[in-house]
Image (cartoon, rainbow, N blue to C red; front, top):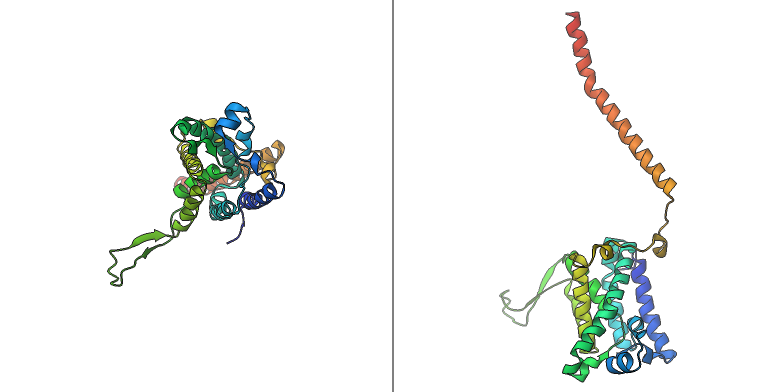
Length: 257
């Protein structure tokens, strides 16, 4: 129950908490949301597309987001920090434009769609889509209110149900904007996994040094490859010699007879 082998997740949780505190202490909360009509159409502030996902601005969202990100640390452990960080950056760029665009299309239906709340809810749900697809449940249990214990009534849950419930609650805290962002992130996550996005985005990776990986020089890579090939050739030569030895001895015996 720690952040072992998940440094990017640890940094994300720390960033969520520190960003929420800084936004309130420095009185900068008004920079981290988008009013479609005011900020994008009237005042022409496109820079908000890159800032509204940087932090949450209230304690409830920070709490539920931090718990959700902590529960999703297994995705980084399965992928590795470099691939995980690359996925986060691609998801950030994709959702930063997609969610405000959808809200702008829905805005004529209701003024509720004019507000894009602050916080990386789309990115969290993009990771949650990977968690849903990659991580199997460990156990199941049934919640029932019947005293008969017939095993037929009640609700069947798994150990993965709690992260889903926490994330679902997070998506409703700034409804409907947070719910739209959650749906966008979920779709982007599945699009990335299903190879719907361009292959260049799916296979792109951040430099290894950004996540603390040591990058070997090309000479070291070639040296390691050469040693592996020499070892394989040596093993093949020994195996061939062992296989041909009985045949040669048999030929000698036949010649003597």
